[in-house]
Length: 396
Image (cartoon, rainbow, N blue to C red):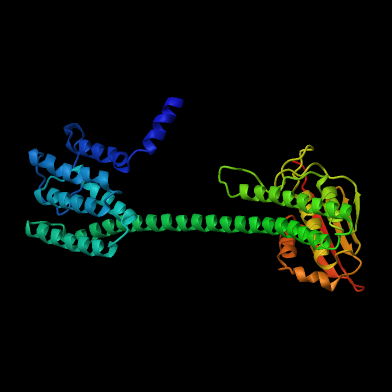
């Protein structure tokens, strides 16, 4: 079975002319072997002529060009048509006559240019053949010639239909590939926004704070160490994102564990921003690369989404409410994860960092794809609150 599979694979990868050659060879043999000889296509009802040396050449002219029916469809059709005309005019009427509709079907399916010209020239040639047969005493009549022409037209039309179907399928696959590519680019852009915005915002805030700590060397050293740690974490996360652009690497962005939320909150605290973090319940398992399978056999896409919600909300808190108490609540339930992040107020001076609004929009899309909901609202007394409900996927 392995040997047969190897042979078939080698055959499929061989040149198209070689793969198309067996059929014309079998057709030529069937037309010339006396034991297999039967009356073939007979257009014009001229007397049948016995096979001779000239018949061999005509059969070869009709059959062998079929090996080129996909590589050179127009030339194949021209040679086969000429051989068919000689076959009918000389009265051999061999089985090789079926090569003409095969050549027409192949030309309709594989001819890319000058299709109308080929159809017009072919029709004109058929009219000349019908006139010549009539001059030689054909009793076919107009109805017979028209009927045979319609049969040939059906063969041509079938080939055209096959070509159009193939083109439509190729266009569908191209559209699917393009849609997939755009979706992947959007996903990478969203991950890149989350990583860069969070880490760079933290570094900017820490660097701004360091300017006012020249009189407190210990605190200055801690702040600069936090900037350094944040930068190293940004480089690590960016490397994971760049791995996505390597087609030979199956990595997904930001491999994190359940303890990453604690580390995230701690980094924000080290940046000088007060955060109260409460975690109720426990996640199903670790968050593997891009939502990999955790130790409990579940897929951690919900945990990853929760992590991103907290990360984006804390990034916004650094931008717009730096130094103001922020409360983070993450509650793990049996069927879903509920996240709430709120601040007591906001500081207009921090808004100079700016924002594009893409972060929350990307989070809504991410959470929505998991069947959840996300809302971000301003509080009446100042500040903001972000709430997310993220369904957990059932273990399979």
